Image 1 (cartoon, each protein chain N blue to C red):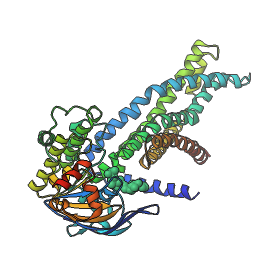
Image 2: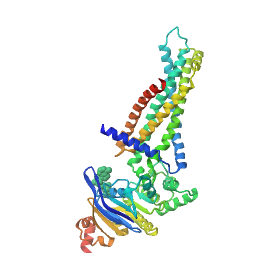
Image 3: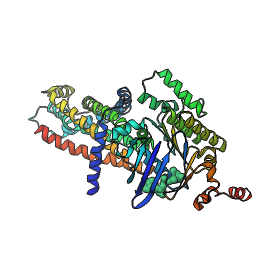
Image 4: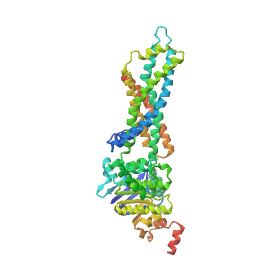
Length: 247
Length: 250
Ligand SMILES: Nc1ncnc2c1ncn2[C@@H]1O[C@H](COP(=O)(O)OP(=O)(O)OP(=O)(O)O)[C@@H](O)[C@H]1O
Ligand SMILES: [Mg+2]
């Protein structure tokens, strides 16, 4: 218990130094672009693949669950769209990126810690926490909402494909359904959640990497722990945000 | 000049540094020698603030380092260069980017003048045609030399080298030692070198500080090292059979 409080304290101390004034804006900017490339652009593929399958699966499942002759068939399109928007896309993107980028951030920073590269930064007079974490943080907070929107689109495409190929509902019903009473607010909500997850993933992964002591084994362990903890916190945050915002 | 006053540092309940008081002089190579595990690295890290001391004060000229705020330390550190025992090169960057990194961070020079500086530093440590390589492609000794190049890139006023020549062949080792010594006298900087290599001691030890089990056991010059009657130091200096023989004959 005592250890948990110490960890939380150190986490906020790290955040404090992350948000101090950067030494050189131009270098941070360049670094941020690089992080967007690796953690953002580099994740489009996996997010797209997963989303298309999940979209297809949700469509089939919704069709299976709503076998009510009183309800119009396009309701399935509406349900698929809303469950992607309200829950699936943001959570899925969060968990996928927690696994992919979270572990890579934790092990990258952890490796830099154990090989004294972080000490080398500090001795040069550079705020190592800010230099390492801030570009990643900006990259993920900006790019996770984009990935989330992409995931919604590709998920809907997955549903479309399954209507086209399989024996679910007529394509025209599906198309009508996903356009039926669309609240743009839902999309903003999904993207906002994704941005929160981006913040959680980066800061937690960085925290675990930054405070590694030891060697390769500890680096591996802390990157696992970063993924586990950020996944749990993503789901908890999801619950809290859903409760606050949708109620 | 750097002045250490009654430095104590403990890990768990074990004192690793025990009441160390010493002046590290400007324009000289201050050699800290001692067996493996005697506390040299911990001492150096305490001096640059990577480890917090438990007691005692560290003065950089008239500035009290131990009482500085984080941003004040950051300012002071721009005047420091440090070579880590393991090199600590940034392994995602090329050697050129490694050496240029502090220049990019703190100077507003043009790219070509920074590149000139990088090549000058790499040339000084005897590295050629490695600009585009990444650290993993260099040998251990080359990494060390690249790390020295990075440490001197900003023309520091305080240079810290943790075992600059361990893992190098004797010829290169002496070259590196002489390089450090040259830079020290040329730019009149305060240099601290950790070493357990007697060759370095005799080559560049303007001032020699002997650490034994975390205590400062002896200090003097390289000439005095060979004629001391301090028992621990004698055991350290004349550890090899060859050295003992030379002493007996000499
Ligand atoms: N982070 C740490 N936690 C606990 N003990 C430590 C830590 N760092 C160093 N020590 C202990 O401090 C002592 C001095 O270590 P130090 O690294 O300073 O030795 P050294 O003189 O540099 O040796 P070498 O010549 O082998 O590099 C060792 O006994 C080591 O176990
Ligand atoms: Mg050491």
